[in-house]
Image (cartoon, rainbow, N blue to C red; front, side, top):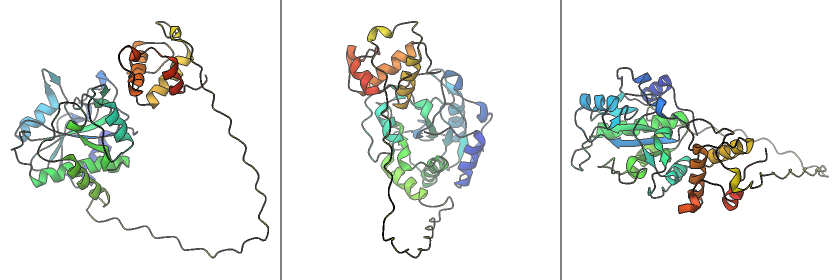
Amino acid sequence: MATPLSADRLLRALRAEGLTVIEHRSWRTNNRNHKGLWGPTHGVMIHHTVTSGSASSVELCYNGHSALPGPLCHGVIDKAGTVYLVSAGRANHAGLGDDNVLQAVIAERATLPPDNEADTDGNRYFYGFEAVNLGDGKDPWPAEQLLAIERAAAAICRAHDWDERSVIGHLEWQPGKVDPRGFTMDSMRARIGKRLDQDPDGVAEPEKPKPPTKPTKPKPTKPPAVKPKPRPKPVAYEPFPGAAFFKAGRNSPIVTAMGKRLVAEGCGRYSVGPGPKWSTADRNSYAAWQRKLGFTGSDADGIPGKSSWDRLKVPNV
């Protein structure tokens, strides 16, 4: 979990990685923050534009179109390897994707699960880069462009202390997507990982010198008495208050505690909150938790049951 980079920090990180960066128009304030939360950030997502030409592609990603308002990413990477910044906030690039993939990215797992669900807002959690390419499998990917993708992703990973497993393609996030098409994300992650083992100028980081070994002290003839550590107090959890408790108008600190646990489990669906008043956002968040546990149909209707409640472990309030 990380706080999104400010516009200045994003610009500095990209340029420190050796990229040519152009600040396009009012990119610092061009965002979709009025439509949802931006952050916490968890990773970087790579796309292709399905367009050609730098100027027209940058304008499209800055403005969007009638069916998809802009901005459509944070940066556009053209075939010469130049990065055009078009947003420093929430951008319309990732859409709804698979929460299991998000959890794997957060944990930086080596293998991603299949993206077979569309239940999580990726625009909140991912930086997005659109690379100018038709995406037909024939349009070439110049070496300068691939290097810029590698550098841009590495710059953000370096700024947040992430590794290369925090970088995914759109096709690994949202069912039905194919971008980026023309290279594999495994090969790109390998390049990013190698870069992160170097400093931004491409020089391998030196190993830290080992501290000098201290002379060993003679062992005491009688070991000092060890005081037993006090046993930690058992954690108390909120007992299941019954399904009837969760109804419209219910106002209770239990609802707030439940919401915080749902957010911690990656199931929060709140634009604001959570708060003490039971709401549709609470129900949608709890439904995501039920689905995460494997419940389906009416068993994942968002109304807590004892089994799912006990596994959520809501602390006493």
